[in-house]
Image (cartoon, rainbow, N blue to C red):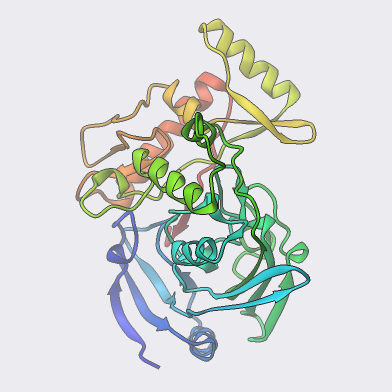
Length: 348
């Protein structure tokens, strides 16, 4: 195996911060993934699986074990029970797969266009945007069990999907290494146009938007918010949305409404679960003193989106964590809500 030593991780992440990995392996086949897991086990090393590097913060000290760069690619298509099934390697760039699905006129992931990172990361956090989640289209996940080195084919139900969570980042965190994901999409299906930004974009259209129209609109909206990776754009040097939208119960939501009313404001929210409400984390951040463009040092808030912490140049992981904690503290003081971060923290 081409095991490397002391490899810089910062260039492999969208945040561009963090120290080196003690050992590094770029695995292009399932066999190489298995060999990497065995190497880590044999040398009693902690294992970290790196995908597209878009949703993580790496410690300035780096990673003391093996960083396994997932590069298993490939997309295979077949039809089954009236659905189009796409079997996609975990290392395949996510947006490349979405482009392929839309080009095949298959609905189910068009609103997830422009999201950076790789396919293997999407089931972990049940990635979602603009009214869609991958939980709606994941058919199964093929994963290696780190404990015994065996492959397991997990159905969608076994993945335990919920809002931004799955078994892969909760109860079974660290147990599985995802090597392939199978998505079941709808051939000729209509695009999902339920999100406010999309409805606004298509207002006044005389024709029904296609999947391609929807993909283009999503990418355009993401670009305006600095959520599309654009070389040279400092506002896209981030981990995307840094905080999850809080899901609160009726009593907590009522308290939020009272606090907002006392300030002459109204809480924007929408139903999330049967008896709960999802609150906009971006709104809470902005109304706690952290507006777009906040900060003048090495780290700050995106000028295009209040939920994105950005590296303005030469920022460190310590800088990012300091701003994160400052935001969390202020939001909790003012609104009584503790924001949960979305990115994965590596080496801390």
